[in-house]
Length: 176
Image (cartoon, rainbow, N blue to C red):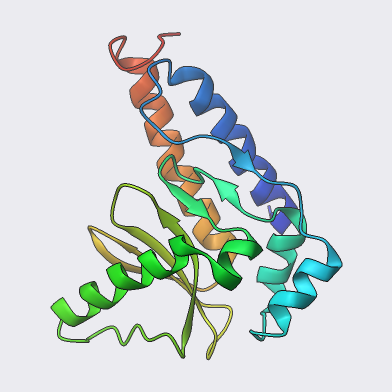
């Protein structure tokens, strides 16, 4: 069965709400998708960056997403254009790439930071040269995804693992 972008987004939002309910101690980051961006907000970003259609569709669905995987926030347009979280994410990306001997070539002229975690190593980068490729930089390395919805589906799977752990351990969360 083929899933649409909308299906992937709705499943991610549902799983996020389930994790939030199970996370009785507030261990993970929650908030879910923001309302979609307006045409004028998208136009402002398009003046700076040539957006792949899939990312424009994401921003139309939601202008940012707090706690997509329980840690990583997908950044709203205002943050992408002129925000401190974007600059902080670049500091992390550049240090990581330098530490790897620049084997990943994660440069500002090729990538747009579209997501980052506040308190862990997690940065999402959109490849602007060979779109719609997306890279997810984590402690485990750099994961590459052919599309944004593939990354979101993977983040949802991580969130499902978190939900199972919260439900299995009464000290962490709730039990069924």
